[in-house]
Image (cartoon, rainbow, N blue to C red):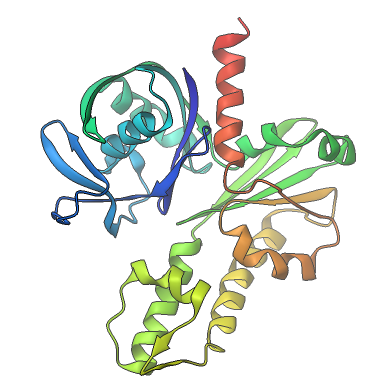
Length: 295
């Protein structure tokens, strides 16, 4: 089976539209939920703390998350896999990342009480952000035509930006700003204002649902400046490094759902993806189809 997988700093996503948080814990939760036995170790996927290490080839969680995502995505045992790296890391870390997977092609794990033997027969690495290009709708492809396209992919730890001209990548940059940075600032501000001890993992729920403390919903007006600050960091880099007034700008990635309105207020040439969470992984799968199915 051919599949695209994004082992993001915040969430794991696959082209089969499976997603879960990029967290693994060995602390027993007593309910048995999310339990995976990987190489004899009992782990709980989607629980624990986030890893903010940029280099996926060095993360201890990379392989357990990868094989769990394969097991969750299909009942098949043999996979052709396309994974992604932040575009600015792509050339430097691609071979190390690929080598890690090639040296660990087969694993046995127990998930949902069933033993699975998973084998990766083929592996390829693609640049994040750029891969969203291959998931453009026919309507957007017609709209863009031969004009330049700047893709802005807002992820968990980074924002990947790449410029396409004549269907080729002509420029790229990874900006060290993503949703985990926003959640960190929100939690830090909440803890300071209310003398609490919220963790990073609670930042998303505070952003989405507000803050209920002392029997009432608290004023959350302080979040707007945080979002504005991080948007400004991304937008400044776009202005300095890309001619975003030319052609079109495609906004994608899970973080685009939070910062979409700010981009819409600044850019008249903005295209907002209809499938921002899965753009990359579907693009990864299409890269694999060109590599392995069209020969």
